[in-house]
View 1: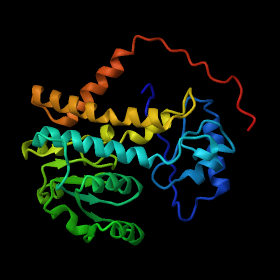
View 2 (view 1 turned 120 degrees about the horizontal axis):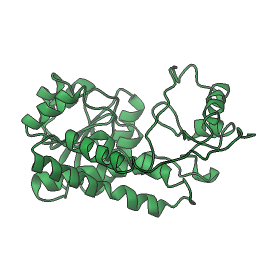
View 3 (view 1 turned 90 degrees about the vertical axis):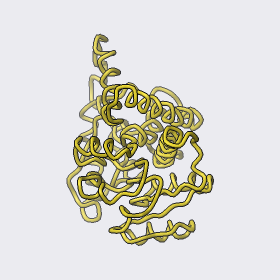
Length: 289
């Protein structure tokens, strides 16, 4: 994707501070950038919030289908995580089938839920945890076994899937793991790059988070410059399988971590377009919205 990856973070408690006026103020700020930054939903926000923001700026992606957007990004994010798991399975076990495999899911929010639906269709076994009782209820409604949050690291599984917040893989937690693959939707799963080296030495295959959780932004990007097509979005998201396979191949060839291999491929992509001189041709005036 020809997108820079910028992100906005609003420092506030969404349970207290978030309201229409607050969101519209953020939309006004986004609009001052005249298209150099596009915003969408993430942790703590949803499509209803985007509708509020959209009242102040057109530079919003991920709006509901009824509003001409691409809808809930978690569906494609979940698909991307699933495809990443299958690529890792192929590399580890010689088959990308996940039938009969056990996946321990740390966090059962929207992304994990959509990943779980695909895993269950393939007759995989899932063990899940979450700090939210509502999320636990959703998991149990699907027939998924749940455990207390502190027990998830020690679950005997084939794939450990972090799907909550970042920094969950550290020197203490990785010693508790009983898995061959780590693949999940959470951002910034590794506390630091040293953890990637530790996993490599333990022969645990790590799927870099920003590679396999890219389905959501791929989905949103399909709104840009063309009418949204769910088929095009799905086709692009399914290519995460091939990208993850390439990363594993580079890592094996160079005898480096998959994290380092992913960074190298990303840096090569960035460097390959550095010679292209881009002139920003955005709006000369703020929008009137």
